[in-house]
Length: 341
Image (cartoon, rainbow, N blue to C red; front, side, top):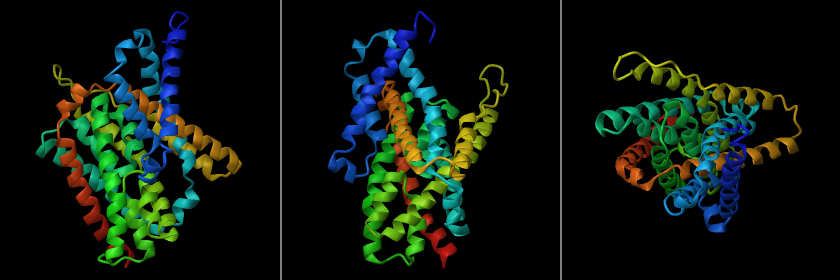
């Protein structure tokens, strides 16, 4: 796609996505959106979908490879750089209870998503797994990381992201309300673990926990980052299992195992960031750049989404996400209470 004959058109496609991503970054800072914890990633995919289903016919076809490059290759780079949000020192501070709660909730939520989504609701495997990843790990960022592993299509990714927007926003209202009611027997540390291990997006974790207290918010963010860290073994295991369970319809032969090397790159970035060799000002710059790259990738995925196909997905992802949300609320409390009291 970057051959001499097509290089300019491909770059134009990337620049086109860049303009939309810049707009998404600005729109996400509108006070009412920022207060709701709506990240630039969510705004980006919505802008992309709006364009894809209104003015897409005006886009030169030669630019499409640039959009695809952004949705695939730049996505992988963004996932790798996401490791600059995490250090091993921070993860250690939450203790074994925080780590165990995050690991148990991630594992059980992913398993439930597949069993309920595919076996009971009759959903396609990709949408069920992406919906589970959004609920189990870190919202839209996890969905984007799983997308190339399960070889999902744009409309499947968009459906999963929509569930994160709905239930992550609901979480920011429900958790502080439960705290005010005083019906859950958790201390400050327990509340931090509970929120960090069960709320979808990082921004939504901050939104839910900051309404309770600063100490709860600090613990919640660290536990949330632990869930993000667990995306590495999750991607490796799902990639291995997906390849073994996906057989060629004609020959019955197993497909080659796809190793998500970008997950290992993410882990390497976390290890490097833990050395603190880079000044904090540089780390902040990398984090800002990564947020923009993630927004670009999400916007490009939106531009590949046809609402006609999204309608075909139906209401099942939202039914599944509702069940998973109930599981996160109930089982998350039970496990947190058992491990912190």
